[in-house]
Structures are given as structure tokens and as C-alpha cells.
Image (tube, rainbow, N blue to C red; front, side, top):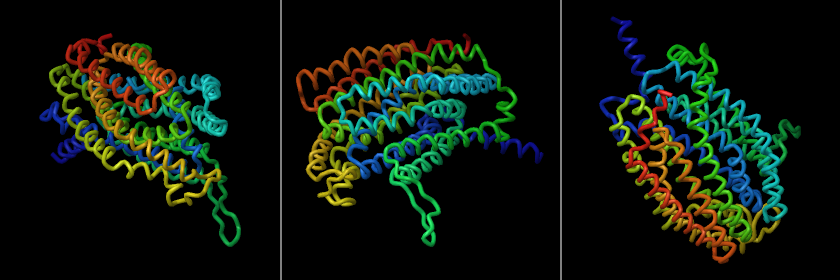
Length: 496
């Protein structure tokens, strides 16, 4: 009797984050899975936010270089990230249909794919440096962009490996584990960023004990790389050392590469990868086109993009949870429940983005002043040396940022609507349509429109941001209509 009680308790513990049948399709069920992912994404946002604040304190050129080089780095790895992200859906559907052996095979096949990706990413580094050199950014900004990009891209494969390991836990509904890993990794990133950007010297009795040189923007890149390695180590501990996963999923005994699963990852993951890279490259073009206007416009744009991350990353987490939960219910063949999920997700998204949008509209200074601290208090406003900005630049940047943040309020609402319905259809394996929609909208509508606004009509960047809202509104409508058609439910992924 005691053994039975212990077994029951262990089963309850092991499934504490999983779907409860009595709450199928409810907000509570979605929130149970989504909340840890959102915390993970929020911690990444805080980490990136703080890192950029450090860079803005360090040098005006550093914050101007941080966003373009960061987006370019993500461009290089986004194709592989998009492919590996489909493992979330594949694991979820196998888990929902109780095919635990294939859950583990998906994990290991994803790990092998990430190792291949790490090697392939190296060949794209010269291309990225050439793109930076082709921009009309100032020479000092270009030098910093190259420093950040080259350092982070060399170790881009570590981020892909983190994605493969995270997909395993998200797909089976154990999202608290990625949350723990991300919180620890991002905390290390913040601490290392401060130390590496500004340097550290510890002296005891006039004897230097620790000396870490000031590295500026390159230090921010190294902090991110080391934090990613730390996250891989913690993920591996949970997946391969914890008894629960070793026994139930045989994570250390079944390490085979599955050609069948690999083909599924490529068949459905490649469209996801293409969609992601097209989305990011289009946004990269947006950032670089604005950067060609002037340094003030680039700095204001980068500050507002940093604000956008406060909304984007949690909504990305909610979208991932939506995709995983939809995948689980499709695996169980409970299609009516799967169709409820994005509407529940949308309610949560509107609550968060609506509240954040109001803050952006009515209290923009609360956010903007964090980036302009070097000219408004932390450093004297009259300081115009290499590690600060002039008070005139600060006023111009602040004025432009306030206008853009009002547009940003509409931007995040439209983006969240498209994200929820877009992730729902991806949960059903409808990645090809997702790719085609992004391709047409990004490169036939969004980027040409931005080019005409900034280079032909010579309009202010506020019009470019307004055009981005139009772009996201159209995408939201397209994904909603596709969702309503229910064609995304008819992909028989597990039967292939």
C-alpha cells in the first residue's frame, strides 16, 4: 500500500506541469505551460535590456552598433534556429500520442542537427562582415558591429544546441526546466556583461588579484557566449542525469540518430527556418535602412526596438506554448480542443500588450531615460568624450523615441495577434503556408515600402514605423483566415 502511494505521488510530481484532462483547452492549462516559457523569455529580455543599458552608458556608438550587429548575428543562425524549433511541435505530438521512444529520438536527432549547424554557421561569418562593411554606418560603429558579430557568430551553434534541448522539455510540457536554465544563464550574462564591458580589477593590499580588461561591445558578446555554454551544461544535467528522464524517456540509453525523424524535421522545419530568416532579414533591412538616415535616428530606433523586446519575448514564449499545446492535442486527436488554444492565448496577449502599450503612450520617459542616463545623471551632460553622448544628441534622441513609442503600442498589438494564430497553425505542421505568407509580406510589401518611404520619398522614420504596423496587421489577418479554414489540421505528421 505504501509503495502504491509513493508511486502515485511520484506520478503526480512528474506530471505537475503537464496537461490536466479536466481543464482541456482552458486558460489555466495554457498558462501552466506558458508561464515558465514567458518567464524564460522575460529573463532574456531583461538580460538584453540591461546589457544594452550598460553599452549605452559605455559609448553612444556601442548602443548604435548593438542592435544591427545583434540582428545580423541572429540572421546567420535563424535558419537553423527555425528548423530546430519545429522539434517543439514534433516532440509535443509524439508526447500527446504516447510515443515516448520517438520523443527521445527527436531529442537526439535535434542534438546531432545542432552540431552540424555549428559547423555550417562558420561559413557565413565572412558574409556577415561584408554586409556590415557595405552599410553607410560610421567607421567607429562598423568596427563595433564587426567585433560583436564575429565573436557571437563563431559560437552560434551553442544557441542551436540550447534550442534542441529546450524543445524536448517544452514538447513534453515540463516548461519549468527551461525556465530555471534560462534564469540562471541570463543572470550570469548580466553579471558577465558588466564585468567584460567595463572591466574589473580586484586589488588586495596593493596587489592585483583579478584583472579583466575593459572590452566594450566585444565583452557583451563574450558574456552571451559563456552564458550559453552554462545553459547547455544545466540542460544536460536535467536531461541526462535526472533519474526521472533517464527512466521514462531512456535519454541516455537510446541516443540513436533517426533518419525518419530527421526527414520530418527537415520537411517541416526548413519552411520554419526560411520563414524565420526572411522575417529577421526583413527587419534587419529595416534597421539598416533607418541607420542610413543618421546616427540620432539609428540610436532612437534601437532604443525603441529594445522596448519592443519587452513585449516581443514574452509573446514569443506564449506563442511557443500555444504551438506546443496545439501539437499535444493534435497528437491526442482532440482537434476541437486544439482549435480553442489560440483564442485563450489571445486573451492573455491582449491583457499584457494592451497594458504595456498604455505605458508606452503615457509614460515613455520611464523607459527612454534608462538609455540616456549617461547624459542625464550618471555622466555629466556636458561630457562629449568617447564614453558618453552630448546633451544635444540626448534631447534629439529622446524626442524622436517618444514619438516612436506611441506607434510601438499599435505595433505590439498587431504583432501579438498574428503570433498567436501563426503559432497555432505551426502546431499543426502548416509551416509551408507560414513560410509563404512571411515571404510575400516581408519582401513584396514590407521592405519595398520602407525603402520607398526612406530613400525615395525621404520621409521621417515615423512613417517607416507606421508602415511596419500596416505590415503586421496584414499578417495577422492572413494567419487568422488560414486558422479559420482549418486546413492546418490536416497535416498527418506522425503518420509519415
